[in-house]
Amino acid sequence: MASYYKDFREYLAVLEEKGKLRRIKRAINKDTEMHPLVRLQFRGGTESERTAFLFENVVDVKGVKYDMPVAVGCMAASKDIYALGMQCAPEEIGAKWGRALVKPIPPTVVSRGLVQEVVHAGTDLGTKFGLHSLPIPISTPGFDNAPYTTASHWVSRDPETGTRNLGNYRGQAKSPLRIGCCAGLGIRTHWKKWKKLGKKEMDAAIVIGVTPNLSYTATARVPEDVEEYGVAGGIAGAPVELVQCKTVDLQVPANAEIVIEGKMSTEELEMEGPFGEFPGFMAQRSLNLFMDVTCITHCVSPIYVAFISQFPPSESSVLRGVAREQLVRKFLSVDCKLKGIRQVSLHESTGSWGLCVVQIDQREGGKGGEVLKAMKGAKHHLSKWVVVVDDDINPQDADAVNWAMSFRVQPRRDTEVIDMYAMPLDPSLYRSGERIDMTNEGSGASAIMIDATRKWPYPPVSLPAQPYMEQALKIWKEEGLPALRLKEPWFGYSLGYWTEEDVEEANLALKGEHFQTGEKQAKSQRKKV
Image 1 (cartoon, one colour):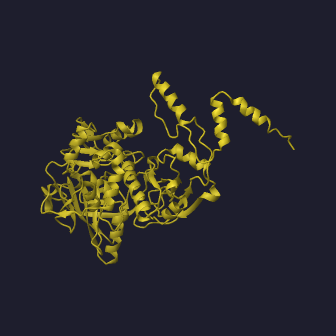
Image 2: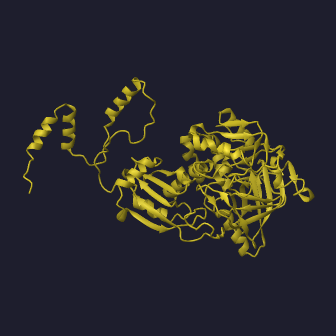
């Protein structure tokens, strides 16, 4: 097996070699043109056609020219690109994630790294070099109120256990030396602990431009007692090399492109937003964390990296969905020791958050009720809609899931509404304009649990049986008819209830002897009472 990527540039070269990178050499305005250009492939192309973009000639709305290229969509514009980042085939992603979660490899600290080849601190910080020196794009031009870092992996440390968190959160560029933070669960938990200890500040750092294993773990909801660095090491098959920050007591990936170090006040919050978010709506302004920058380090000639999120599907929905599917599957199969768990699917159209479909095999002991009971206790794995389906239902196909919910569910018997962890970016939870404190989890959120499995044997699926559909497919191809993308189910199959009489009559029909059935049924005539 080849060794893992040593840095972001090595990975970028592989993307280009595989035809998954487009270089744009013309001048592109990072504030008005960059994200709209990348967005088009998500609104008008197929997933297999999506690529990463490298913008080599970047300017802004004031005409400033940056000497730093910008890469967008390079981690997960498609599942094929995600697989390149995992160094495996797309169908092997789940197994590799599963191994990394079960067998993380702790990081190692080294004395120096590429990310500290250039250091900006002291008097030149904020004047000669600061956040304004980075080509941070505007993600939703016309609606966002500032450039925001998006592929920004925030590092913080638990003051009680020492466990480090690597979480991906947006950062609003507020001044050359101040950046907002839309605090996710990991950094928010640490911030609250530092505050409770009476500390006025918390050390933090932002890492930009890393190898894919770090981006994949930073965007996943890894359990709080597990360091993302270790899981990233498990994906790579080798320890992540870390280097000590220059001005804060944290360790960051040694071969990253850029690191922004700073201090976060635990006494004050300030307004942040609005910003286009992954549910597909503008997230309103809210009270949130912020960081004062104390140092910026980077390698020589760095590349700035951005995610494209906002309306699904997007790079964000691929990143979130692939990782969370494996985390939920591990939770059910390994942590809860449930039998018959086949697949977990988080639908991209719901931001890979709103709808979670769990496929089980009842023949292997899978039980819909047990899955839903476990999910009710999975605070941070819970989606707004959790649906359990049988093994004959493709959990990734919305049509198949809708079919199961329509004909395998009695709402009074098979559904339950429960309270859930509030996701503040969900606009159905708060009225627009209502002030939100993003450091609080909120209340009033709910989830619906649906057991869409068969409760008893069903008659066969009403499609022609497999041999006849296969013969039809053969004729279709011989006739040169348009290429098909067959959806499951595309042939009929038994679901447990079909009598010997039913089999016999169907066979008679295929022999042209259906009148025999008619004669038999004539004997069943009864006077209507």
